[in-house]
Image (tube, rainbow, N blue to C red; front, side, top):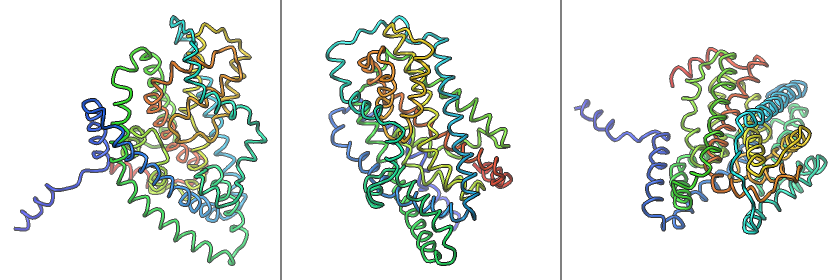
Length: 428
């Protein structure tokens, strides 16, 4: 009797989140193709899912970062950890940016297209160019000033991750120096962290609903044959992201003593969500929880991951490098070494803070092109139709980079239990 009960309960087992997301993706594509008119009626599911994420991720990040600094023990440790993380971030993004430019120039991507912009093209990209001008005109001083919110509440109200990160670091440093008098506040932060972590677990269960809406809307809008004329650009970018993940990130994991394949399988559910929504904020709390479960100390995860979302945008750097050379070739624009260098340096600055936002790549690219006006900004119209598809690889690449960064920094700092990490990965 008990055996029959066990077989019955097993037959009704709820599929894993990964399976649910895959099913939602396939179903969304089919509905978008067969019943495209339904797209406006299901768009709200994606908007609801992303709004719920934004609502909870800010307070949770604040608690995690502040508690990470408090748990580090000394501000000297925090400074060393933050300095090494930023050194790694900037070194990696600079490396992949220049490498992507070199490979694209070597392959001659975009040659033979001979794009000539029309007045309609210029009007279509006007919004992106306007946002890009604001981004490009913002110097380093304005960037630093933008880190400080008008009030602590406004940072959370706007969902500005950089400002929340600034407040969290400042609060953590102060609480670190307050000694026993900070105990009630620390206890409150620990309780709030547990609360919002539990909240995120409930919210992430709605991921299949959000993915379904995103796939229906996108497929109905673009169709399956939209990207044929730019298939070469899309394929090149996907291949470069694959090379980056397998070659560079996989190599770093090997050097750290971990299996790249098991590591990828460990984060397969989060990768599927990022791939289908093209937004990485949705999985940020789960990413941090899983990294801690691997044996990486909490202060490393709490500092490196949130900072990486703003400063460790490897896939976006690859996109900017490929797109700049592609558009130059497509418009017949000859770029000098100094023009290329100027645009790449501009890209390194304008891309900061561009984490997890679908469509932000076009704005950042427009700001980069503004550094060397010889490439017509209207040529961006060629990439608009495929931006969502390119955004898949861009989001997954950025996410993968931020999965590996805490492992590298943790190994550098000797703040990762490798034996525990191997045991956890062996179970997946």
